[in-house]
Every structure is written in C-alpha cells, then in structure tokens.
Amino acid sequence: MDVVSDAVAAVRIGRPSSNRVRVSGSWCARLAPYDGAGFHVVREGGCWLLPDGGGSPISLGVGDAVLLPHGTGHVIADAPADATTVERAVPFDGWLDARVPGPPRADAAGAVELLCGKYRLDRSRVHPLMAELPEVVHLPNRVGTHPELRTAVDLLGHELATQGPGSCIAVPSLVDLLLVYMIRSWVTQGTTGAWPTVLGDPVAAAALRALHSDPAAPWTIDRLAAEAGVSRPTLARRFTALVGRPPMAYLTWWRLISAATLLRDTPDPLAAIARRVGYGSPYALSHAFSRQFGTTPGQYRAAATEQSETRGQPRSPKLQASMSR
Image (tube, rainbow, N blue to C red):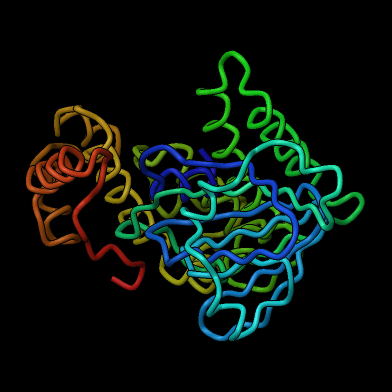
C-alpha cells in the first residue's frame, strides 16, 4: 500500500452512495453538513456552489469536479448563490427525490446534469494527509489535466445512466476510485501544503513508502535510512521537519491506526492482528493501543460492533488518534 491508499482506507467505512441528477430552469438545493465527504461532477451545463461559513461562490462548468472532504454543508444552484439563494434552498434529499434521471425536455433551457455522491468516513483515525485537505477541493476541467479522473467520471456516468448487469458492484467501486483520483489530483496539481511537499520529497516519500508497504517489518532508523538512500541524521532531520514527527514515532502511530482498522473491519483474533502490524504479542499491542487511544482493543471492537448493529453500518467509537499525540 502507498500513503494515499492507506490514508483513504483508514477512514472510509460502509459503502459510498451516488446519484445522477438532471435538472433545468431555476433550482437551488442545500446539503447539510455530513459525517464524511461529498462530491459533485458537472456532466452538462453549469451551476454554482456556495460552502457554509461565508466562502465565495464557486462556478462549476462542464467537466469540473468538486470534493468536500470534511462534509462541509453547502448550497448548489443554477445561479450565483447569495443569502437570498440560501434562504430559498430546499433540502437536497427531498429535491433529489423529485428529479427524474432522464433526458431533459426538448424545450428545457439551461439543462444541467450532475453526478453527486457521499462517502462515510471515520474521523477518529484520520491521517494528516486527509486532515490537511481544504474544505473544498475544486478540480476544473482543463485539457490534458487529470485524465484518469475524467475516465472514472465517464465510466461512473455511464453506469448510473444504464444500470447494466453488475452495476451494484461497479458503481460503488467507481465512486471509491473517484475519491482516490480526486485526492491524487489535489496532491499533484501544484497545491501548497505540507503533504504534497512530503510526497514530493524523495527522502521522506521513500521512507513513507517503505513503512506503509510493510509496517510489520522490524524497522530501525538505520534500515529505513538505507531504504531511503541517505544517512541516518539526514533521514531523521528531513522526515521530522516535513512529516511533523520522527520516523519511528510515525511508524508506531501508523501501526496502531492499522490495528484499529483491523479490529473494526475483520474478525481476526488479537494475536493475528498484532503480527500483522508488527507487535510481538497481543499483550504488547493491547498495552500500546490502550496508551494511545484510552481504551482496550476488546472494548474498541465491542463498541464498533454495537454501533454497526444499531446503525446498520460499521462505525467506530470516538478515539483521540490525532498526529499531535
């Protein structure tokens, strides 16, 4: 696994949802803040997005994609959104139920087609790469940019429109792929920020690739420095400055985040999980887990199972797993 894949896998829970929406005329819908992430892709026409918190309206044209990685509430409308627009906005779910996912009337003016979707995320184990994403990631459609994202959008649009055999598997997989491609596009489009810089640094990136590819390996700072092709002091200095904590401290944190994911998503016994994340015994893992999260692995798993049964999807208890610890 690589850093982006692991960062997404650590927080993603349940199955994503998506809809294809066609609308014309004057319209305005509000999406309330969401415990996850949301996206919109414009397939035809154009519209406007106004995020909560007083941000500037964002114009979205054909082919534009927008990701709201922190579930920020927002309004989407046919015209620039202002205070009056927000007041007349209808709840998105009710508005969506009234839409007919077919071609607009021949006389319809300003027809717009959107692909909209949501991902449920567990914020208790968020990787700092995900935490650093801005409230709104706008990826304009420009010739030659983000070709893999454009391909995924086309495939998703086709599946939602045709509902062919196998769509129940294809659609969620494509929505997951869309999330990865949108984050990758943000990382590679020249964005300023700590983690695009980290992933662009050959030393830090090499060390992170090694740690994420095999977190259970008996890593030492010397072995990791050799993997990155630099001296031990160079690795320690550059990694700590860019990532925000020393290499071995990052490894310990990531092992425990991985253990939490396995406890939530698998029935594996604690001994097997300990081996998979690099701990010599269940006791050693349990001690480190309790110190980091303030709860035992067994209590964590029981709470996650209870929430899964009561809410119909896997959820985890609120844990303090921030990189600042």
